[in-house]
Image (cartoon, rainbow, N blue to C red; front, side, top):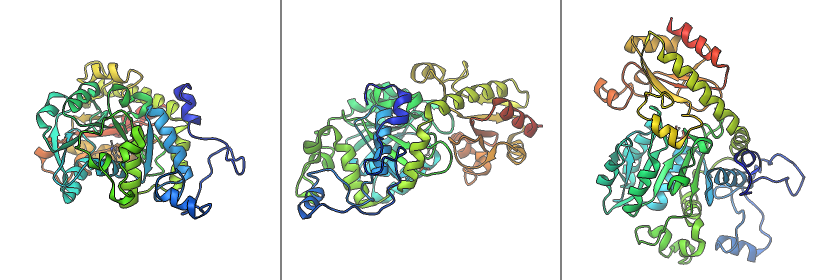
Length: 422
Ligand SMILES: *Cc1c(COP(=O)(O)O)cnc(C)c1O
């Protein structure tokens, strides 16, 4: 399908009429296991000598359509779906890391990822060293002999800061490690990180890919270009004891990383995606280009309105010409700067509480990337345990409000903010 355009791939990639029934939409293969043809077929499947379905923890035909579609949209070699965005991060790093290893990650990340990297992964003796995504050289200073990857978000949640993927990819490669990009807030409609030198893309498909706020899902895309032969990545280059000493990189070449995430990571850690959710996410992806453009157009309209409002202290949206990320927005995602951004209310903490209590069209909740417009006041919710000083450092100061602008009429979104701010 490589010759088709992005809109066509969003609708068709990976799918075909069901060979058994002719069903045009991809069926939900709601089954745990798949019958073997005979004992030889079973043995070949378990030995990874032939590809095929065994058990839905590892592989399922509905999920396979989603995987092929996201791989096509990101222009990657292969993909793997799993139960959530956090599961995608876990599986990607499980393939690369051993006890005592570290990743160098941007400080500007989704709050849940900061917790996962600094708290959850510490239990595996995996460590994180922080860098500043607005200063690519800060990554260089942090890479050491035990570093196994650099991790950034293309558009960072919540501040909407845009990372210089090309510059950071070069620094990662000079350090002998792959660049992993969380492309959740941009989606491949706005940015294709692999085209700028990234090696691996991860998604919380819970957000814009699914797009309707109805299912948790994650995806890993393998760019297929990284050289795993340096000896730093034994899961890929060394004999694998659980597959009779097979070397995955030697055997599977440019798909080795995606395969390792599946046949080692998903197999042993188990955060698989339900076929029902795979179906919902792939249905969502069919309208990704339409939705994403509307999200961005609405967000720009709302950001401009806020900027001109006397109750607003500041607006941090990369689509505004005076924003620090504006140049990178023009380089990496000229179609739009995404739909998630923050602004500050002159009335501080109290004004933030009043706003979230007074909205009618907006939903006050902890999510982004829904068709509906969403709002949260981080200081009183996601960041409430932190001190005032730590909140400010995390970009969640007392006056900060985060919006995820939906695809409703922009006039209605603005009218709701106006009445809530009054
Ligand atoms: C939500 C989110 C995640 C985590 O994804 P889940 O599907 O909630 O596990 C990771 N990165 C970003 C940028 C997110 O917004």
